[in-house]
Length: 201
Image (cartoon, rainbow, N blue to C red; front, top):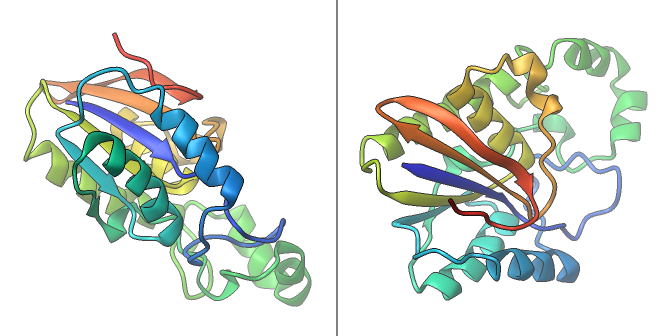
């Protein structure tokens, strides 16, 4: 299976916002960037089109759905990392008003949940469960496109590649960019990460 992971475009949200599972829509420029990315697809349509069920991912997925004439399958396991009580607040406000918990979380973010939210390890587990279900229902020659978020894409790449979670932010995942991994007989390989266009063999 070839798994292509596309991040949604930029969103309508103030700079510096904790944007985990806050349901912000795509901005006009974000929508346009996804359209530009979709236009670079040159191979046959994917067998499946999956998407996070958050609005910004759903809107991006609809661009691909229109291009391929297939229905997207929305799955909450592809959501961004849940930042709990901090979600939707400004980071500088969180650092000022909840300093002790923020400092503890920022030093232990892999295993420490945000208050009322989840840890990055939790995100790896839930995205890994999604990946396992996809692998069980596809064949080597299938192509799957999934529209997700920076956090969930990093989690999937860590899970698939055995990359230590602490190294997740070594992976650059820009808006409206794509990564491609391939699995053959249970072994994963990276084709590309953070590409501004879809590439095929």
